[in-house]
Length: 173
Figure 1 (cartoon, rainbow, N blue to C red):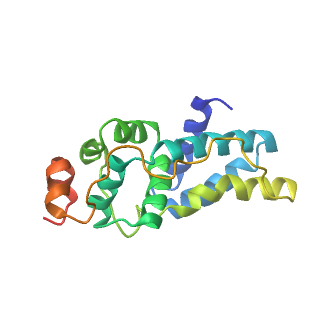
Figure 2 (figure 1 turned 45 degrees about the vertical axis):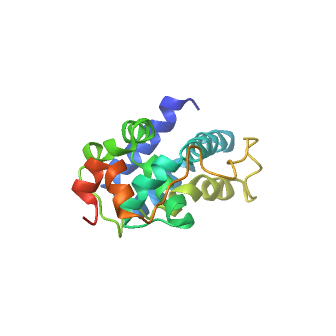
């Protein structure tokens, strides 16, 4: 599976789910079980590589604005959600997290930031296809600390200054 096919699967399931992350996860499993097990592992590798790539302080700060605070688990689930938004939103957010203010039509912190199940869809599909747990994907592990320079994620002034467009549109201020 190449990157284009990976993003096509992500996009088609998001569109069919009308943006609902839980429905998208279910549809993703349904779509992946139509593939062979190796293709499902390829999808999992693409997903995991992007998940790890999004482990960045700057993106964590954007998540903190959108979610009105984001601890470790919330940021993990946010990264799954971000991948589920498709290539344009994902790459745009990695390039400039504040651009999420323009890339997102809307954002509901209760529903949108919570997409943990997207991260498990390939594992679930693989297990349904083979009856066994997916093997190690052979990817380097996620860094122990996010990439970039740490900053206070709980300081509204810092967040408003770093993410002016996001803060104006979605922030607490």
